[in-house]
Image (cartoon, rainbow, N blue to C red; front, side, top):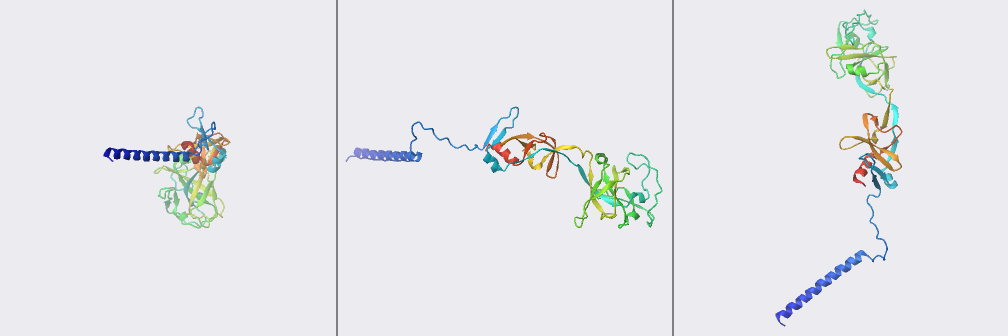
Length: 320
């Protein structure tokens, strides 16, 4: 056999092998594809990954409406609450010092020390029976522990077991004094957490606040009625002061209903219809406990998502 015959036979053998491999690949593909569909039968549509979430455009808004399937809402654990309107008590917590009654102490304040600069004539106050004569006065520490508050006779402070009604001294700035509900009692809380008798209510003393010109601070006094309060002279207490405007009703939502986006803007999801949610902006004045006080937001009675707001935002952004 010559060289040309050998070359032709080799090429024919290689061609047959390639054709056989190509036919085998086609057969495997046909098996994988399954039996051919019947003539005229519609092809099956692939399942949609976002069938549980649908987004609708809201006219005039860049935020879409989120519509969930019932099973999706159940899986996300969506819960709702309503926007309510409540009289939120506004409070301020400051430090205070228990002192003897001011009406039993010599007036150590110079004329004109009352807030506003109006002079008050010095009165010859008579010390309590059995009290030692006062030779000096010591400054009461301010809220941050620094000295320089209203001067209280040292002899009076040396009576830790003084019986009868006591007073409480708090130090406020003029701005804080202006915001104070001056006709309402203050709530006293002891610093020690053990063996407490509970909060004690202290009534406004009716005495005008005295001004410390060096620190531009005011000394404000409250009276502690009764004797079964568990307090003594020189005790330090936390004083919860009511602020003016506490009787005004404001919009309130659960704080869990508030969602903050990446830019720090606050939103809530309102439940406009069953399984339908719309993201609305809100303005939060402050947060008290687990409640958010709104200065602007949905109308009172509007259902809002209280559990699952972050999950709804994810469904809105990722569309699944």
